[in-house]
Length: 190
Image (tube, rainbow, N blue to C red):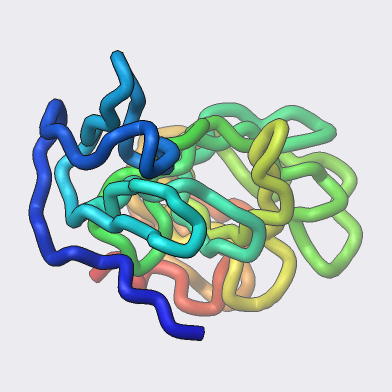
């Protein structure tokens, strides 16, 4: 399949890139008055076979899809689910552009049975999860050893908690709490 489409030409929003009689408007472009214009900064891509003009973005937004690994902050924990705000896709520097609210159903928290999501996740916890559904709403799973809480604060004094075996310990309060911990709890944040 031979495809000589990329022009190497950098375009800015509003630049005229093609004529509507020759090309259809594709991603990163729009048509107005018989002409096609760039709607984003990037490289012009004119596909002669498909007759589509599009702009390949220089810095594309992060849009979540199934299988992505994300970091999120727990905002609420109800018996049936934890509600989280996605902070970032792991390994990407750019912020997530799609819906940032997500949920982790109690059945997707752990490989073992969990009765109440609030028993293993608390507001303020930072978790690592995998996207199991991206549309119409974002749903995560923290089942598996590498997924779960990677940083937790004491629910009483908000001091960062240390791992002691399978539990978390607050030295300030002399308090022990349970969480569904990732295998690299706290070492990830250092």
